[in-house]
Length: 612
Image 1 (spheres, rainbow, N blue to C red):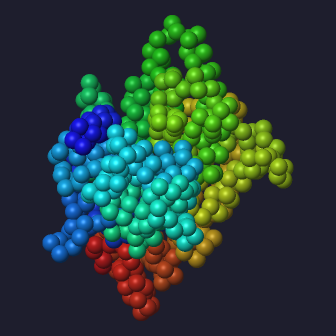
Image 2 (image 1 turned 60 degrees about the vertical axis):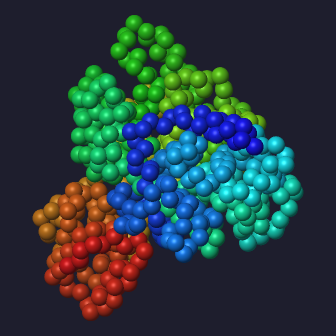
Image 3 (image 1 turned 90 degrees about the vertical axis):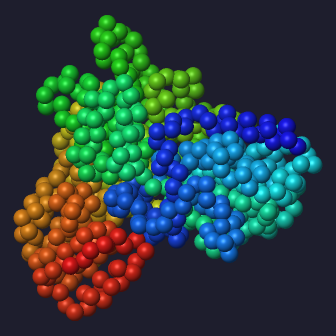
C-alpha cells in the first residue's frame, strides 16, 4: 500500500500547491468556532451579512486548523461531520487547499490516513454515483481491494462548495441506502453519507456559503466553524502583495479604501479586496488622464466595478496610443463576450447557478475560443476536470455586475419581461418599466439573491458610472429622466413597514449607488449635531438604519440620546443589535422598552458591548 499512498500524497501536493502565496494564509490557520448559523447568515445575501456585521465576526472561541478534526476535550470524540462556512470570496477553497497540502506534507493531522478532496463542481458532472466510485474519483491510485480499507481507516472526505451544488439536498425525502456499491443520484448519495448510512467510518468536512449550509440539519453537524475576514494588518499585507513592485501605489490604494467606510468593510473579504484594489490602482494610474470632472476616486460599488471592467477590457493599452486599431478590435470582441456572458450571468443568477459547463456556454452562444483573452481571466475562471470543464465567475459580484449590464442593455429594446426567459409574458416597454419590475422581483426574492444585482442596476443609472461605460459597454444616450423616476421607485420602498428591514437598507444603498444622497446627508447632519429629535419619520428611520452601518459618526459610539420614541426604537431594533457601543439615554421611553431591549440582548446576532 505504501507506494500507492505516496503517489496519492504527491498528486495532492501538486494539485493543492498552486495559488497558495504564504503571505495571506496566516488568517486561515485559525477558524472561529460557532454555534450554528445566525439569523442573518441564514436569510441575507453574503455582502449584506458583511455590511451589517461591519465585517466583524461575533466574539467567539477560535480553533487552530490542525485541531479542526480533533476532540475538543479529553472526554469528547472527534467530530464526524464538520461544516465550515464563509461568505463568497473569503477563502473557503484556499483553506481546503492549505489543509490538504499541509496534511500531504505530514505537517498536521497524522492520525488521518487518507484525505479525499472533492468539489461539488465535480460532483455536478455525475448523474448517479456509488460510494465506492466517489472514493475512486477522489483517489484514483487505490486498487479495488483497498477501497474498503480507505473507508475503514480514519479517512477525511472533503466536500468543497455546497453552494455550487446543482441539486438542493432534501433530507426529509431522501431514500435510505446502505450499499456502497449501489449507484444512486448524487444528491441522494451526499445525504446518505451525511446521515451516516454510507461511509460511516469516515469524517466528512463540508464547506459552504452561509445560506446554503442551512440545508444540512443542525442535528447532523458535530462542529461548525467560520472563516474570518481580514484584520487591518492582513488587508495591508494583501495589498502590498498585490502591488509588490510599487509600495507607494499600495499605500495610496489602502488610504482610499480606509477613507470609505462601506468599501473598507467589504475589503475584509479577500475576493472583494482584490477587485477593489485593482480598480482603485487602475484609476490612480489612468484616471488623471481624463477631464477633471471625471477624475473622482471610485466610491460606489458600481464605480469600482466599472473601472474593473474598463481595466479588464482595455488592459494597459491606454498607454500605447499607436495601437488604436488593435484596441478597437479588442473592445469589439470584449463587447460581444460581455454581452453573451451577461445573459449567462443573469439567468444563472435567477436559477441560483454559479458554475457553468461547456453545454451551458454553448447554449448561451459563448465562443469558447474567446475565453483566453485577458478579459476573461479577470472575469471568468475555468477548471478542467476528469469528465468536463467548469467555468465560474471570479467572484459572485462579478456575475451580479455582468447580469446588471445585460439587463440594462436588454431592457432598452425588450418588449417582454426579461425575468421569464421564454419571453412569453405581459408586454413591458422602456427601461423604467423593466427597472420597476426588477426592484419588485428583488423585494420578493426569498433568499435576497438579487439585492446586489439591483444595487448595480441602480448604479448604472448614475451619471458617473454611466459616463465611464457609455459608448463601449452601455449605450450612449442621456439618463436624466429615467434616473429621477428610478429614485422615486426606490424611495417608494422606504418606510412602508413597521420595522426597518434589510430591504429598506438595501434601497438606501441603491439610492447611494444612484448618487442620490439627500435624505442620508440630512439625517447624518442631524446625527452629528445631535438634533434628530422629531425628525424620525419612517423614511428617515430607514436612512438612520443605513447610516448606522456606513457613517463615521457611528464609528466609535452610536449616540441616539434625546431623539427616540418607543415606536421608533422598536422599528430600529433589528439594526441596533449590531452597534457595539450604544447610547439611548434621555429618551421618553415607556417602561416596557426594558423588556424590548432585554429580548434584543439575548439574540444570537447581538453585538452590543456597551449600552447606556
